[in-house]
Image (cartoon, rainbow, N blue to C red; front, side, top):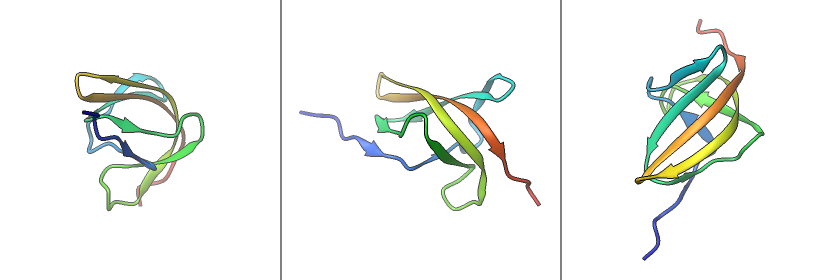
Length: 80
């Protein structure tokens, strides 16, 4: 029986991202999810919020029903 895979076209952080370097972040998401790698993708705090910036996903890891993203923020939108 295969695991369902969800295709994501944006990164939704829900405020759970962890900073690894100045503009590199780590984010764990429940379940196994597919993300486009090395192309600009929208970053949002919630599904419905405005874009908080653009990121390039550098790495996607699947383990223990968890998807771990490593992404680099390439542009930041102002919050006003």
